Image (cartoon, rainbow, N blue to C red):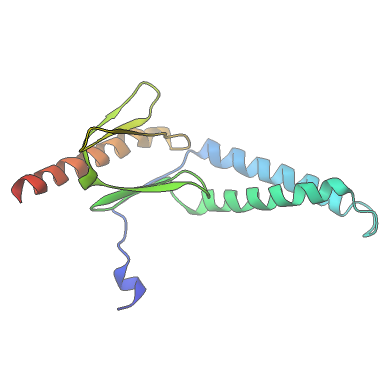
Length: 152
């Protein structure tokens, strides 16, 4: 089988907050401008040492911004959901592992595992109008998983 046959398309995409995208883009462009001006100041032999210290964070921030623009905040599948906070941090959770979900006062989703432990999912960077949609889809997935477990 091909890899494309094995990939499952997501049911719902939860988008990022445009303010986070724009601020990341502005920060990347500003740091890129500073790096460019210091790296190519006058002559190839007159390179400012500050430019070498700015090159690595600028490259990482550029990849991070590109990654923000190309990837949604969360993906909801039939049996799991995936949250992509940043280039370096993401997580996949399966609905079968949980028995209840809730939202706390800080707009974070609190998930209760079957063994009684809790997990907080911080939602910084999500579009504000998509928080109830994400919570509703997680709750629906958990309830569907609970009914499937009860029938078996």
